[in-house]
Image (cartoon, rainbow, N blue to C red; front, side):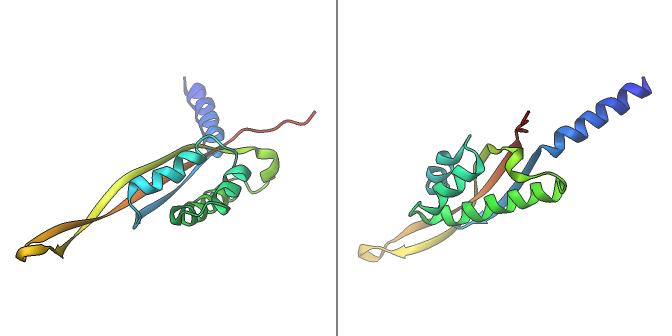
Amino acid sequence: MGNRKKISAEKLKEAKKNIVFAKLNNCSISPRKMRLVADQLRGHKIDKAISILKFSPKEASIKLEKLLLSAISNWQAKNESEDIEKAGLLIKEIRVDSAGMLKRLRTAPQGRAHRIRKRSNHVTIVLESKQLELN
């Protein structure tokens, strides 16, 4: 039984090498606007995702591009001996969650005030490598 645990632990370690993630916390863009850009990236390979982000006019694409590059460098830190082109990295999961809100007041007619909610978000990106075997 002890031998089984070692084998499964080694398989788990190898599986974890193929999956990396990066997080962006308290980004000051509303989650709805961030999801518009994030939905375009889900399931794509990283080279296609970077080109989508480079040519997107939205402000959220700048932050997501920086986060994607961070996730790629995390993968390189885990897999120093492997080549990034042969790894076939793709975006397995990208999650945009709501974060805290800044609540402000804006003056309104007749002595009233309206509440302004400045929303922010958390983004988590998970990359998975599909090893390309060239025979």
